[in-house]
Amino acid sequence: MGKEFKNIMVGYEPICEVRLDGKSYTISHVVDKEDIYVDFNGKEPYLKKIIKPSEERIYDGCPFFKECGGCDFQHIRYSYEVALKKKYLNDLFAFLSLRNPIEILSMYEDLHYRNKCQMVYKLSKSKKVVTGLYEEKTHKIVPVTECLLHPTKVNQIITAINHILSKNKILPYDERTRLGVLRHIFIRYGFNTKQVMLVLVTNGEMFPGRNNVVKDILKLDLGIDTIVQNFNSRDTSIVLGDRERTLYGPGFIYETIGEYKFKISSQSFFQINTMGMKKLYDLALSKAKLQPMDTVIDAYCGVGTISIFASKYVKKVIGVELNKQAVADAKINAKINHIANINFVVADATDFMIQLSENRTNIDVVILDPPREGSTKQCINAIGKLKPRRVIYISCEPKTLKRDLYFFFDNGYKVEYMEAVDMFPRTIHIECVCVLTKNEKLSKIIF
Ligand SMILES: C[S@@+](CC[C@H](N)C(=O)[O-])C[C@H]1O[C@@H](n2cnc3c(N)ncnc32)[C@H](O)[C@@H]1O
Image (cartoon, rainbow, N blue to C red; front, side, top):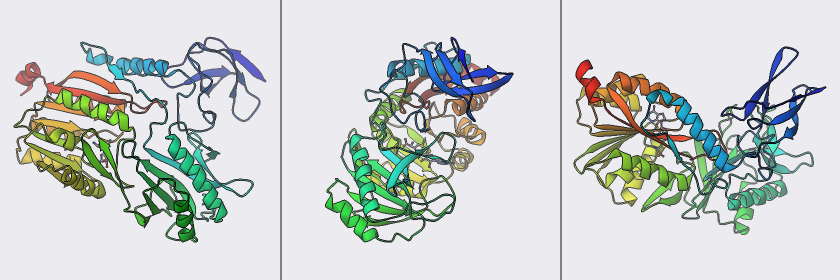
């Protein structure tokens, strides 16, 4: 049984609701105002035919798009995706009544932009080692031979390594039985340095035949600078475990962004879009209006990239980050770039801000770039007590940014400007740069 639905309504996410016999169903991969035909015969209804396609629909997107949960927008023109993102952000932040609409810095390369690529291993029906990606919201592995978001070189490396692993009869891990060796392939690629780090994630330390695998990989001369074995025997879809050993090379790679060089290890956070990263930092720093005598906090600083970019404009930067390895890398990054005015601290950003506010430390500008969960009310209250002249909030999740803005309002700050950088083309994710300043009128009333 099937049914036609005309002129469907699709919001930011590429899904629509359809109803049959009083029941509601969600259909994915659709575009606003299309006429579609939905098949209701199977377990789950599915989009059988697009009767009247949108002019924004494209047909040369990824062949794995329908099954793989990695992308959201492989079926529409990139210009339309950017327009959708712009509308989404302007609707979400309409309550700010900003003087200018929120603009989006789009990317020159909307494909092949990821510098961190990961895939999961499985055994094919013909007993070959193949790679795949998880189906949306499930643990079902969809075999994927190449990902359009990966650099072409990375796709070639993954294919070559699959052959080597099959030849050496290394068994992929089976989530149900928890047996087998290989779990994931994880590659970091330096777009500017062309360096490649290969990480093979295994089910614990055991990796029979690993010397032969390494020898075979090196023989192919794939341009791999370092090979790492990461141990992950936990029952989890998180790719990397905590421990690893280096099988070849130094165990890390370098990448350059603008005039700076960065050391990247497997575990450290590094923005996944190298070209976008420079645009993001240039935007954030141009809005920070830094002064030569300023002390700046870079909260959630990762491997210290923003601290390093900010350092040449100010007297002092303090970078705070929870991940010990990232801070170790940040210290090395400052050293290799001959920068001496940054102090990196391993700490929870909230605890650190509270401590600074209790010590009444003088802070001029705070840059904060938290993970998707956003910051905390306590952290923002502490920032409020420190009274920095400007706060630059870089957010990869507009919804938590919106929540956190209210905590800033409670502390007498107002949003002066917001702009977004499309760091994650072909997905619904988007990075915002929000500039907050002291609301002088309000401060006089409240404080
Ligand atoms: C979105 S990343 C930003 C990293 C860096 N600013 C950059 O541009 O590369 C967020 C960082 O926050 C760190 N982090 C997560 N929770 C934290 C916390 N409670 N306190 C401090 N850092 C935290 C993560 O380890 C990660 O490095």
